Length: 84
Ligand SMILES: [Zn+2]
Image (tube, rainbow, N blue to C red):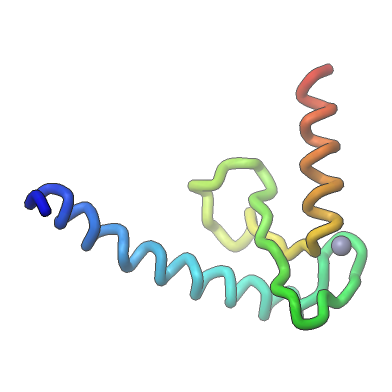
């Protein structure tokens, strides 16, 4: 393992851990309910969606919990609107 690779590897570890913690926090804030259809996702985890589409913006205001169906609907909608 090269030194640079190792250092990069170490640097990404806390980010991944924090991202998981962050997503957990967002789901808790949204009471584990989809923010579009208000459906409870059951034992499946809600997906965390970046409202402005910028995945690097991890501010809680930019993140909402969505169920699988709404996430898919939203992505389709966004694709259609981009084409216009
Ligand atoms: Zn939904």
